[in-house]
Amino acid sequence: MIRIVLNAVDSITVFFRFLRIKSILLLVGASLVASSFALASGSRLSIPCMADFVAASFAIFGHIFSFNDWCDRKTDAGNPKRKNAPLLSGRITGQGQLGLSACCLAAGLLFSAALPNRVIILSAAFAILSVLYSMYPVSLKTRVFGAILWHFVMGWLVFQFGYAALRPLDAKSHMLGMYFGITYAAVFFGSLIEDHDQDKRFGILTFATRFGSRAAFTASVLCFVLASLYGVYLVMRGYIFPAAGAAIAAASLFFYGYVIPAMGNVRLWRFLPSAYRWVCCCIGGAFIFFNLR
Image 1 (cartoon, helix red, strand yellow):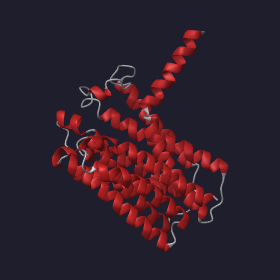
Image 2 (tube, rainbow, N blue to C red):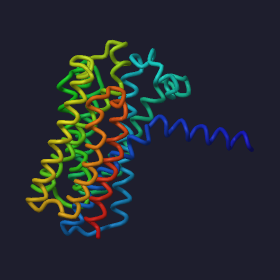
Image 3 (cartoon, helix red, strand yellow):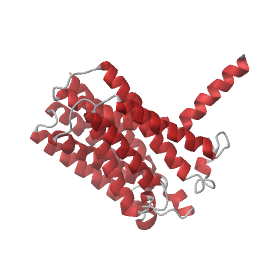
Image 4 (cartoon, rainbow, N blue to C red):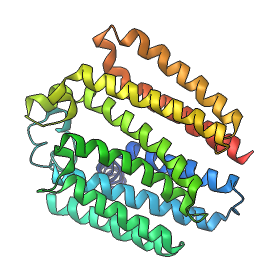
């Protein structure tokens, strides 16, 4: 009996590691922030609808990350940072991973079908973006500027996804989605710095390996500055509540408090992704709090 329980726990652990649950939660959280803006615009909250949407989000975003890992199975084989991944450690086969990824996609489309038609259209768009980003020969992640554009579009689309669950897309959703797209591009640049040494060692072409870590750090900070300025514009246009804008400014000041000393200390650059995670969580929490109060 104990062995059965332990095997079940191990299977669940492998399942969640396979789906990169932390990364999925960040995207689901961003979608829920978008839903809070739809509610602030007068949409009616439906618990069954939101539960269905959360399930669809987990499944669709799980497919994106798992499909990417399956496409990278050969290039990741010699990467010591990925040696404990379920596929590379032999805890799941390549066919098993691809099958689970396909099941996630099918489940996401199924859950989306119970929501307004615009949601399943966006779910299909995510599936197309996943193929364009991960699968050869297109593989936008191997194209320096293609990967940047993909992350901007992805950030914009994630917002539309959450907004569309409760309200038809409109000028407000498009404008706010731009803020999320710019921020997601900034986070992407930060992740390139973290992976720079490993990517360079295995000959993986990224913005950081082509132009250097300093260029990636600078681009990341400039994107965040642009997002901050655009956030001010959104407050002035009335798309964001002033109180939420003040919370964004406070979180941004915290971020700049890290950036200023980091500009002269290369060793601090590796903390950039963590700084982004904290700032994005604070900003997202502020959005949800002031939109729902």
